[in-house]
Length: 443
Image: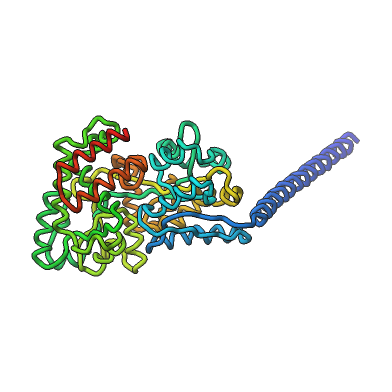
């Protein structure tokens, strides 16, 4: 009797436990189903929000050459896929470094007719021109919403900011101090790529004697000459003294700067005679054709070479500009949100794509630049770009003069004016005095 009673009790307990676990399992399944339904609903809402955007988006830039045009279009494709009802107005003004575009933009901004967003270099070009004029809407909220503070270094955010206000989204980082060369030309003439400025002149003499233009230059926009000069400054002065030019601790009319000016003037003896009629991309084409052996340009040139079907380390090579190894002269293209734009929500959606991993990994391999984010998919980047990513993490970073990182637009324009005269008259003393006067006025 007792055994029967005990068996009944055990049976009741077993049935109860099975029931409890069954109910728990049902509740767990119900919870999982509810969670999945909520996630699906959230995705649908997000999709509806993307589809809901309509109207236009005017994007102002100066990207027209091979490589940069393809990179820009890759961003456009992502945007069109997400927001098919928004018409992109590609307001592009041709001209490297934005020389022509910046003049057009200044007119529009002063007239109260800003584009929905525009390309601007991070650093002084951004802050001293548009930040101090209070023409841009702070976009800290985008960084917070997208979780970007985890993927952008503090140093990067600082050059995008005026005080606590973040004013633009970086889409890339470029390296300015690169010497590109035609590998076949060097091999055919049994020449070693120069690592120092002294070696550059030795190589240039050999190439010139062989009937080959040593250095391709296209300075129909004078910024390309400034671009070479900033690299000669860095190679001659070193990073600390180069940076001192921008805080007044190093004089622009010092003996060291005069030495750099003279070196630059001497380099002009080895450039193509038609340089004043060419743009930077036409100069790069001379290197592709073998008409010239080398060119000094930022790594958007790599994007141009690849757009012409060339492969890095096969047809063309690359090294730091002579005497600048261990330094990474940097600039960054960014986009901003002007105040009172017509298509604010469309612009915010654009900025989110520019700053996203998806956007930067689509854009930069084509443009010839590296991502500003710290989480790229390295498999998407070629051998040159992987080397640039590595160098950016280990080299001394210095700011570019020609590309808005080191000086304001007004100071940059003054430097351009001095350079225009220097290329023509090659007067070293006059240039040093004029550079110093520009510094005195702008510091």
